[in-house]
Length: 459
Image 1 (cartoon, helix red, strand yellow):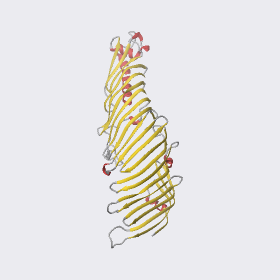
Image 2 (spheres, one colour; image 1 turned 90 degrees about the horizontal axis):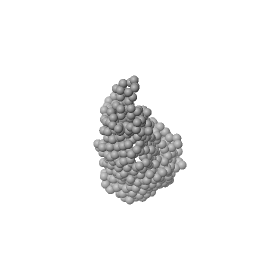
Image 3 (tube, one colour; image 1 turned 30 degrees about the horizontal axis):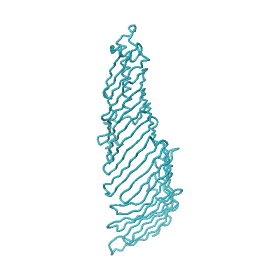
Image 4 (cartoon, helix red, strand yellow; image 1 turned 60 degrees about the vertical axis):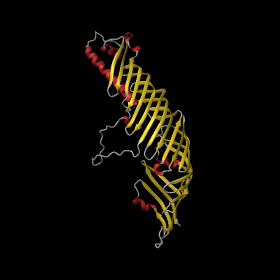
């Protein structure tokens, strides 16, 4: 049976709207079946494409793939099945190979090879935004072995000159490389991710000796890699982490040092606003949508060290941060344990100029529920009578407790006045002391509320 100039445009009614195909195929099929004998039919099928082009819409952008050569073949003879291909992409690389299955109704032994030559990642550039791009070359020489139940792979795959430039990248990537070596049912990985500041060394391994109980692991270790998350965060990180994957669990373990950071929070991002646990999602028929949980649970156990050059600006607070945190995630959710210290800082809001003398954020559970232990005084240069007046905020972020103190000791009303106005209550004022105290208390409430807001957003 022959196929002459089959136009792929005829398949349009059967294709998704996001997929378009053009070009013609010519083919031949020669199949025979001896019904007097058991077993599979004998035959060969070949297809050859000409001027073939497939366009797939990805993220509302067309991704065209054009083929200079597109040859496919399938052969079934002498109790062996073979699938072969030769694909040459326009202005790109080549993919060729064949897969053989011997005794397809019995042992199903595998053989063949897969080759990728000079495949350019630039092919995906059309789906990127203006100014974004991908570069790099993929080459592979692989050989198949084993059987369908226990496949084996031999050879090497290399990705060289990889450079992805996009707003979604948290660092300024420079040409990098990655190599994978396959040896039967095991593989190893080595690579380096280069950035404009710092690099990350990658190493890993995988084992699929038991195909239903496979295991893969990748380690990343770097030194002072500059990470940028516009518009709020710039930080240097030195990661030493290991990611492990199995069919039943993903886990992330290790430590991350943050020696330098600048965090500026001018407003609360939408991603920082939590969703109520009472939220119920409805479909178009106003019926509740059952939330699907992730197929594979994720556990994490990370230690984060905050160095001596980490500074935060948020809601009037300018502070230096230090400390250590342990990030743990399991089926119960995400939790933080540890302490962030504020060795020095200033707070300015509603006309107040406060100096942080002591600052501790203690975490023992949900990230947005730290325990507060903050002590700040009004700038002595802006306070009359050599009085030291301050506020001490303790307790949980949900229910903070504010306590006024002063040196020398005086009434709470007088200390409040020095704290928020820089001077004592004047007996000559026309306002009553009670009204003045009420207004001062309202100002204090705003200050404490901003402190708590800063602490929770920091978390």
